[in-house]
Image 1 (spheres, rainbow, N blue to C red):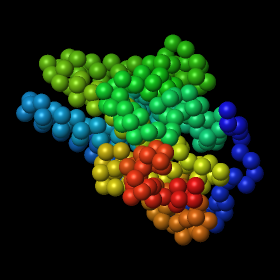
Image 2: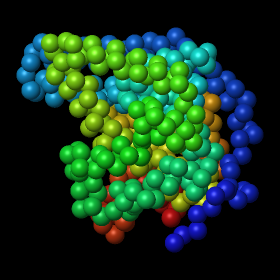
Image 3: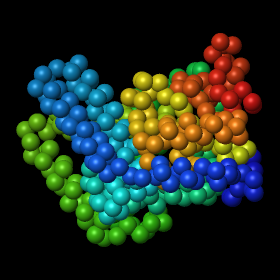
Image 4: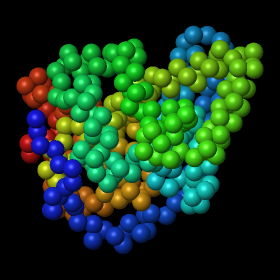
Length: 338
């Protein structure tokens, strides 16, 4: 078995010294922008649900499901920013709004997600990184895969046949999994936070169950979440750290330059600039692309950073070169160097 370190050797990290003045400018949280963005996601999801229920036709429900699923993906990215305290500058407001309107609707808690995610940042791609350990034991996250194996993975994900793996691994973020034993996953999930989730769940799901439209509402809320969590999140997560050389910090995390379709379906709100986020996690989502452009002016960054064009490019990278036609070889710097 390969030798995986618990900590990184000296020289692994990218020097941040020359970028710090810009980082101070970019690390300013835009409270108004984030509040309006959150309202917009809920407004779009509610409008899509209302139209689908009013028309009451299966094709319209399917279309509404795609729209709602894309908004769920936005909420997941917002949960990530709130976990870093970058959603609102006031920490209490950040965590309260982040729980009630972002994390709870996804079945998670900002506090539980933060407890796990900070370890991921401190110990990326080492045995002290729980995300990395999950990746190593889940055969769905073992790469490279053949064309047939990759296609079968996506089919199984769409059909939900491997959903149990995603649910099992994400239970550390879920209040319901930490309610009776709040220290089970290494974080003291307080009684007040647990009771707050219960009150929210009773109100949120109680209103839907009380409504005569309960089945339509539950379907529009739960089915897109089920599909997006198991398909789209799987694609995005496998792009972040799989199939990278990890010889140094710049090629231990992948940044994906998204297409317009990628931004709608998979990676809204600049979340695909994942290397930049790992290097400077204090920079909120709306400045990540600007940060990327700046870093590309550094010859060391431009030469060594693992940058992939589009998520289809990621899928191609995660298959053996022998199964790819010559015209479809990955066009990334890191891939070309390997």
